[in-house]
Image (tube, each protein chain N blue to C red):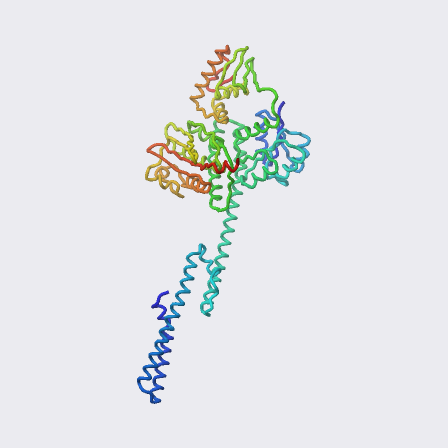
Length: 337
Length: 222
């Protein structure tokens, strides 16, 4: 609260007091009082007026500062009317009422948008689930009628499936609710199913796949990890070079297991590396005709953050290594016995 | 004896194609068309395994599952397009044995079905496939011909297994590689050639010369 502004607001009151003082002086002088008496009364009046003004200013300032502090500490600032005490002053009460009204309309708007978003998310999920039925049917049709033509379609279907999965997980990742369940899974199984999901894509791009011993149990959600691996494999195929190769390896240390997926593709320029997990970031390679959306790795990062998996990328001139690090500790297995 | 599978799936294309696929993999398949009578048909057909879609017109996979569980312990595989945690949890709670989401990977689906059938009905005899006096021992990974035996690596066994299963037919290189990939052996075209040469060497050593014939530009055949 600015002191100057406060004083400016008090001008009418000060003016009224001065008028009162003038009238009193005229009256007293007309009644034959001495100038000294009048001056004395004036000084006393002024002292009372000034102390009144300063005391009210400080009290007001204190009150306002508490309110400001309270508001600043709130996460949802528009909820301030809910926690402040109802003011005593008539004009403050009007402001309080206005704030209440503003809060209410704000809450209504938020509720409306939230339910709209929820409905939209549900619609997207439902749409994806419905789209999966024809995808499945086409996949079965092609697998039952094998030919090079069917193989091409199967490759495209894997693309379509990847895009629908991406949309599904995007819709899910935007929501704060928990959509995953952590359980003990075999890392090896997830890797194999991720490769199986991209079988025709990998076969068509002549990808050589090698892997170390991956038998290892981690606590995580297998569907999410599978999705993340699918995105990484998809990128490896997209940015492949001459004789593409993909290598899966695992390193176990005290408190974590690191699963690395390395390809020998075109790699990521050092300048792009820090930003590849940003939403909508396409980078040099993505912009040069590879149709990058900047969504895949961003989603991977988001899901990893939610699951508590560390996600890092490493690239030197050629080839990229994406590493997923899973936390393991004796505590989990200890509790499970 | 062929194992019987009952298929409860409302999408017609998937139903017929799944039937073809399973029949091609040595199962006897019966598809339910009237879902309200599913239970009666299970009692009539007495399948070894049930494949059950969750969303069904006029009915629901969970309901059917809990009804089956009142009188039978046969393995139940749930297939669904919605992969929410709730559905998965529900299917396990109600006694489902596996939960597979669409679009399912046929290799994974077949592997799951195979594993469930094997667990529920353990085969008494060890698995041996034979063709023209040559016998392939799956458990011990060996090939036998007139008393002579040769050991096979994982890759070689799977390649021979595929050829034995499709004996008499021409198997294209692509199909063989596909089959190997389905069995988590990521072999490329060159490696297949290397493996074929090794298999032929081993076969010759036990007296099986010219057992695998090459059809130019088409593939291999037994």
